Image (cartoon, rainbow, N blue to C red; front, side, top):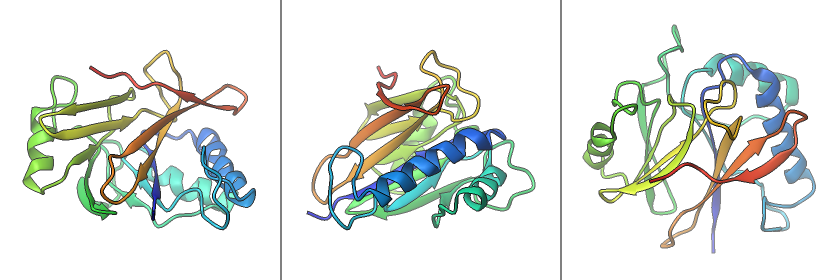
Length: 194
């Protein structure tokens, strides 16, 4: 089975130190020949990377410092001026369609109706978003909503978080949320959901 792993990050807000920790963790896992929970020889730990806004400049800095770089699927957040990335994007992976946005244009602090409608409009089954700085996952009206939380300015008691999404053909997605401790240690965490 051709499982792809997607790294999902958002809201670094200038915290390149923590972003570098995540990228070095990805590098370390790849160099040791192991995936996150499923050792697979000769496989990268991450096949695609998504950035959901508010820290586009941080990607360049952290990649240069670590040597770990991706062809990012990136969208612009409300604090990413003057970047020219789109505010929303769509990509497909193993038969799953993803709608990406930062969230500030979709009323995500109040409800998810606008976000769900936007995802359905492009025939996406998954909506990835940021902006709230809180890790979140829920299935609503046939759309899987995923917010990886924030690396730089978390607003939950979990602290800094990101997500790794396993995407297999004709299988449900598997989503893992990871927390980053004060000394850079990684631990699996649960997302807030309803």
